[in-house]
Image (cartoon, rainbow, N blue to C red; front, side):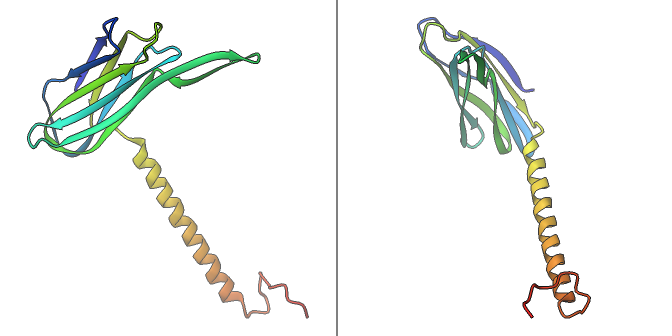
Length: 169
């Protein structure tokens, strides 16, 4: 973890801006996870973050919202959303960085007053695993199709063909 901090909104403001101290990313290519936790309750909060490489001025931006709603309708309780969300900066080259962010909240009287932002460097990402599994499945399906086509062609002229065509004699 690189950095974690809790922030509090002023009662009269629905936006809050902050910037981190400089930090160093030392791996050739890596990722950075931004985790936003807010005790939202039938409301929302959104972060707009810009990661600035202070060595060359290159900027990476993202936006992520946190929302949690619940209620009771037609005799059943329901809920949707989450109080915690993660967003990722990926493919980051090594260098010195700082994070600038603007956080907005819903402008109702019951909206959330605080939130926590956590920045973690070089986190494991399950997406790569899922992409690898998908590629392996596609390769296996292509191999199966090619093998079946070859077997069908191989047996096509045999009197013992296990897959005879339905021909009318």
